[in-house]
Length: 315
Image 1 (tube, helix red, strand yellow):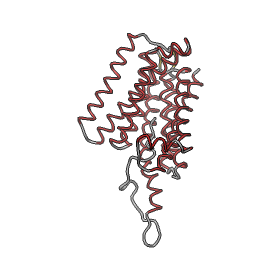
Image 2 (spheres, one colour):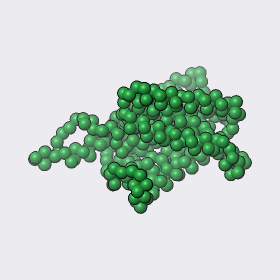
Image 3 (cartoon, one colour):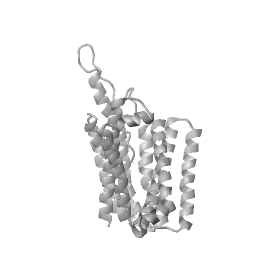
Image 4 (cartoon, helix red, strand yellow):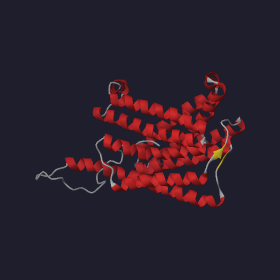
């Protein structure tokens, strides 16, 4: 049921974006902090609780999406999390999305529709033999390790952010593949088989690793580097895993042309959105920067602006 798979994938992207936005809104009230006391303080904030509910709902929606549709169909839809994040967080944090941001949203949505309509991922199963899992696990974990080593070796922010973002993308795709297999086990054999399947613990571990890699990527350098690597990498690796593990199929031949055009639109839209982030922050700051006459002092967009803002939300 591809329609249900897409619906639940969209709901998952929107739910995760909303959850993260509400969590950041709650954390912003407290300023800097950390540790158990910080979390306990946040737990008394309704916004933070809404955020936790959103993130939890996103995981459930993703599991449902993967149970109804192909991995190569579901995972690319999560590129919508970035537009959702900006659209939800902007009014929530009293910010305004500029025209370029709206153009980026349109490009991402339109490009995704063209790509999925052209590729038309179909078929596949929920399970794969260990003879397929073994090379996939070795390849994915090897790529993640190589990316981490590259980030440690080359200290430049661009390389570190790109490498860690790519590692997080591979981790997300592998997590989704393991989750699809685990949810298939649950649907076919019940909770007992689900909790005894190695894929259940595999997706928990790879999911945690992907989150940690993403946080480090966001700290390492510009969002304009890490976010495209994460967004495009997740969709691309998921498509390959769907074909390699679960016998899913996508259109080839002349369909590759509109697929590439759709992918190019998505990439362009993502780049436009991440470049709009400092401009959104600058709109708010310019209201606070007043001259002696009481009028706003003009500043170049992005000048002296921290690229790592409250809109750093994963996809």
